[in-house]
Length: 330
Image (cartoon, rainbow, N blue to C red; front, side):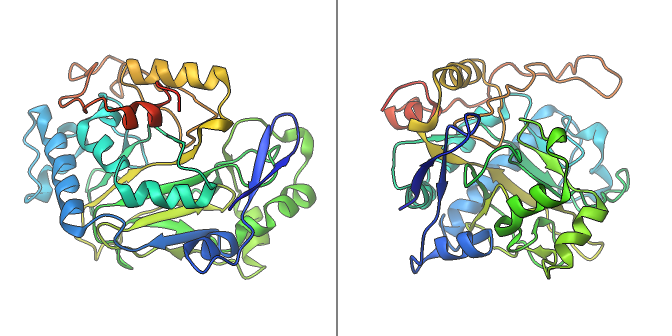
């Protein structure tokens, strides 16, 4: 079970994994990431992927997944440069909530934190169409999703994998063991006066060399439909693009869970606001609750006429869902 320790005021509390456990937590502790096989039945994963693709086709454009010539921005809802969708109320679609509430997904995070009284992030959907002609290849963008002001384990991120992720396909890229030198790096290689409370920090290529010189080389995480990919937010990582050899449509749901007991009253209120207005938050479930825009804007700055203020299919508001959302207390 995770051990709680008091830390800096900003930290509130931090955790540490203190294995060996004889399961995926040993990899999460030592390598900074882990893959849990078949956390969702593969057939169920295909169902979730199809629901995601159906959602993409619901905007009335000539998008055709069998015709790569239609895979261009004008036929897609607005997405970030990293292929994620968090507008149009997609994060609160029924299929997104159903995936978040899969029993083995919840069990994995309950094991990490030592409690099943969890909150979940209202995180994004990623659909990456390979070999798009209208989108240049993305350079790597290594980062951690935890402020250097925080010490210890505070956030474990997750990818609910709904498609094949082989060596040529899009997938998470991590620097194994970089979580174990996170504090050493910030303390010896950076100026503390530059540290921010914001829970994201990018690495320059020079800083990456410091990590790679310690034999922390980038690894693409391989996975199959239904696998759960987990990583410590202190692990340097980024989203890896598919190569020209890939014909796989990467489809994943991001989901992070943490103990409800860690959330402040303010965080709970912000989660309620996001939930009630069908909006996205960040990778964090209990803190750092930045609510995403309710309105989606086109690249020219105008409001997307396809903007949606509610999901196409709302989930059933069960007690379990409302507790995970932070709307109903445990």
